[in-house]
Length: 230
Image 1: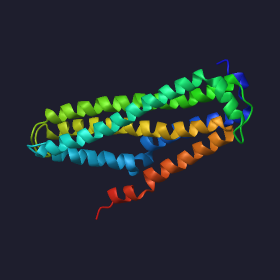
Image 2 (image 1 turned 45 degrees about the horizontal axis):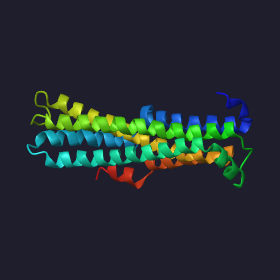
Image 3 (image 1 turned 45 degrees about the vertical axis):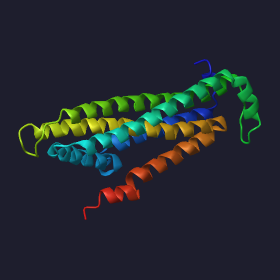
Image 4 (image 1 turned 90 degrees about the vertical axis):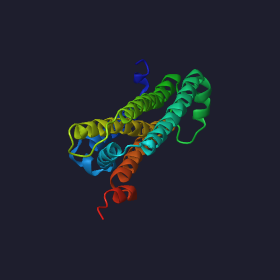
């Protein structure tokens, strides 16, 4: 809190824009009417189909392998995030050295210890958020593996099968959504690093990340393939 008086108007503008882009896109991609037509909503429908196909199979080796691949991907990101957080904490301890380095960078604004610390804290908070999302996604994928192991055998419409399929698909969706939130935090965490150079770079990178995320979730070839009814 003691660093807030060191923020100029342009810093506040960039910070508010950064938060608005992150939180606004999170709401748009998950809770708006357009969310079902994006990559996240389309993936939800495929996860439900996967749940029904899994319940039809007596041997579920393929399903266990797929869940194992998902767990490995999430574990990789969680482990990587720990190293990033450790590096950022170390950078906070060497803020005096970073001030001298930042002063030599082009477009670098006024440098002070308090201002540098709050900029680093924004980057650190982004990756701490990502770490919590990745670890929670990892735990939910473990719960998914338990549900697969305890799943009955049956087809759509049989007693209890539809309810269990929704339970499996719902757990898979929750884990996948938290994984997506962690990846989104990576994108905005990289944008937050632009504040080290200049507040307007932070604002520009936040808007750039917003465009990239929208294009990938709503205008990408991957989405076109998933939604191709033919």
